Length: 209
Image 1 (cartoon, rainbow, N blue to C red):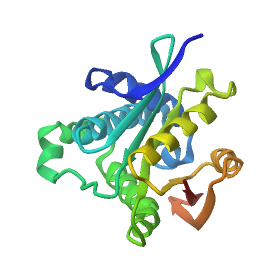
Image 2 (cartoon, rainbow, N blue to C red; image 1 turned 30 degrees about the vertical axis):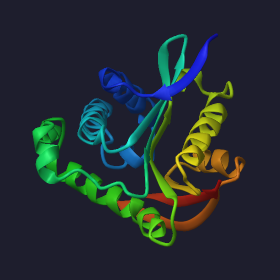
Image 3 (cartoon, rainbow, N blue to C red; image 1 turned 60 degrees about the horizontal axis):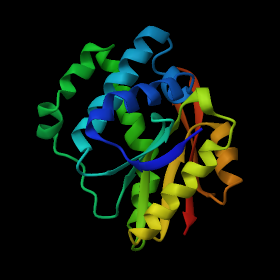
Image 4 (spheres, one colour; image 1 turned 120 degrees about the vertical axis):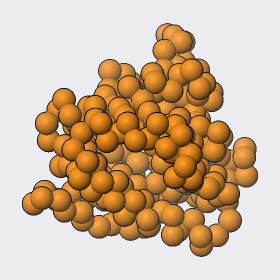
């Protein structure tokens, strides 16, 4: 088995988005808003693909490859990151997202995603060298073999090498929360998000490097 880490290539965006869609399939982060699997997968894939395309040159998109196949991805935003403009999103095909599912639920999901990430963005303003990990995914087919831990070590070293002092991100999965806590991350914000009678936790984590 050959395992290597490095930047994601533009030609690999679709493959990375498909991986993330598989990884997020049963997360309350999506299922509460899109309970029907077929619609959920269409919306997930469209949102993730267009997000990756629009911000590809603005973020640090990393990948883990096993025998040449992408098995994990991470999107890291440096402290000087500035989100792409609305026009840039449109030019990269973002309006196609609304063809993937119900427009109102998509807008509700986008509002939730913004709110869930707000504690991390606010924390980034408290000091220098704070990076934000906006997407962390490991292919479900290779989970449980230590790949996630090795990938975390890789992008922590990557952030250090680029002058980073801390990493922040949020998760809505209790299982993932426990995974990160065991690897030195600490919760600095905890809240509950409700949609149509469904509730989920949202934990913001940080780690000094």
